[in-house]
Image 1 (tube, helix red, strand yellow):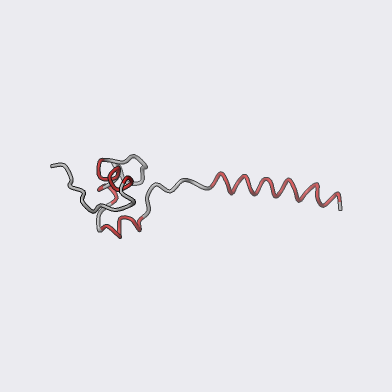
Image 2 (tube, rainbow, N blue to C red):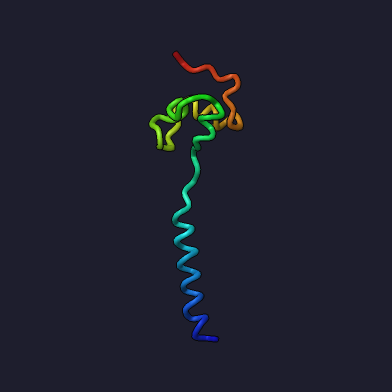
Length: 73
């Protein structure tokens, strides 16, 4: 039994570490773009990057809604 625990516990810790390292924060999803009918760059400086422009900051501050947002011209 002790021999099994010596191999199972390190394996479990390693798997948990790999799982945790693979998790990345979700800054945006395609669902947001589809929901709002906009491209990713409507809210992000560059697609696939977490940096937000004015539209993205508004969207984040207003509970994921663009209602009332007027883009600068």
